[in-house]
Length: 128
Image 1 (cartoon, one colour):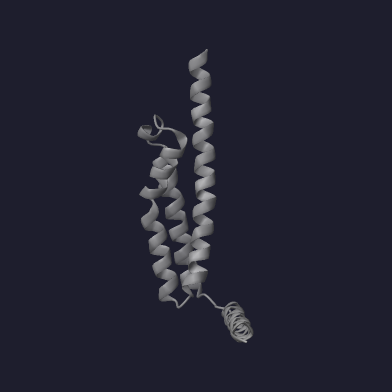
Image 2 (spheres, rainbow, N blue to C red; image 1 turned 180 degrees about the vertical axis):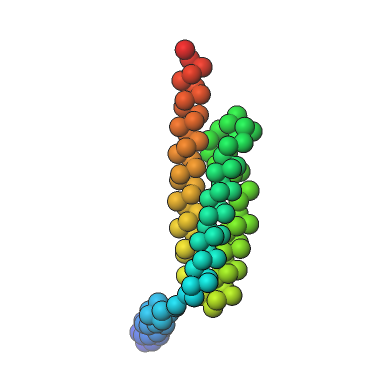
């Protein structure tokens, strides 16, 4: 009997939680034009920071994964600034974090790819 009661309570709780989570995503947010421009500017600054860091010679001597990690860490404050902008406009933290995570992952992939290409080119040039 206790097992049946426990299973019933568990199913009821799971259904309630699923319904609440679904409702969070159904509520759309509208961003002001001013915020969109600020976010685009912050994205530009983030990408510019990454690009500028990639050009520095100290990263060329490191292994590509290490240099990518250091480059991303150097430019992390730009993402924190974007998150602050989102939260100031009452955008749910989950939505803001998802966008920033997507941007961070795409940037990491691009930086790693470029650093690996550069590393391979340097190694190929040394073998001749």
